[in-house]
Length: 212
Image 1 (cartoon, rainbow, N blue to C red):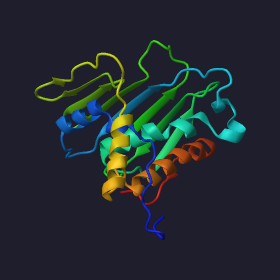
Image 2 (cartoon, rainbow, N blue to C red):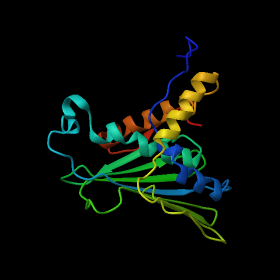
Image 3 (cartoon, one colour):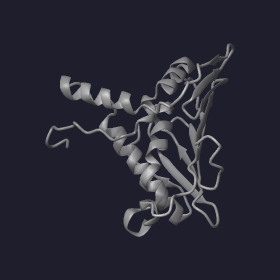
């Protein structure tokens, strides 16, 4: 792509475009120190016949979905991971992944498949500088500081940013402006996602290169 000069590429990492998460990030403000991020994904059990079950030809379930969550963490931390470590729970597909970032920040991603369907799918906490950003399944967000801010609760459907991402992509193509997600970030997220399988097989952290 660099050789051709064509950088008109967009991947569907939509959560960084979610209105609640963007507002919470703005209210949280810039960091001065490393952060700790916890991301719980209650992925649930697969339906019979899901293509994710064909791991021999289609790859693992996390490989197909995990980039969404790694991208969200990296966007919140404004950096690309420098290492990935992963462990798997015995007897199921539950994964626990630790991402390390250049400034010493860490993101822990728990991807679990045996949780109840009534529990929220995605909950996230970002802690740094005496502040906490909390996201509750893209229905409500809050920031805890000297003065707590809590968003309005979305009345019906969750907004995970799909429409906003599509609009940003179309606008960039029409105007020739920069893509909404830089190519470097897309590559870094994909590399980290694929490195999870490598880390599981090696039983050791995988060092990544080219991180911001």
